[in-house]
Length: 47
Image (cartoon, rainbow, N blue to C red; front, side, top):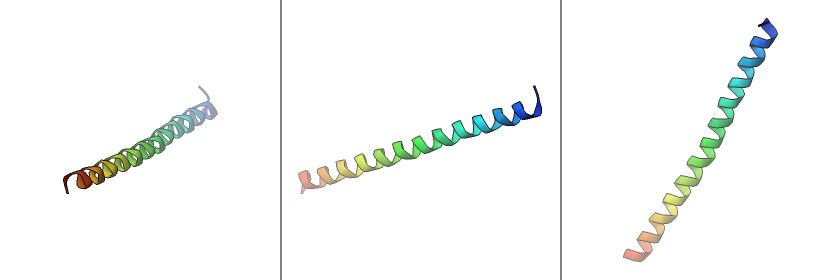
């Protein structure tokens, strides 16, 4: 494996990890939004 291939592999894996992190941010945002909405619904139901 040449040096260039090695760097290319490193860049590829790091970009994949970055993509996973970004998608997790989106998932976390959606989950927190859903929890917020559920809390609002419970508050309106119970009060």
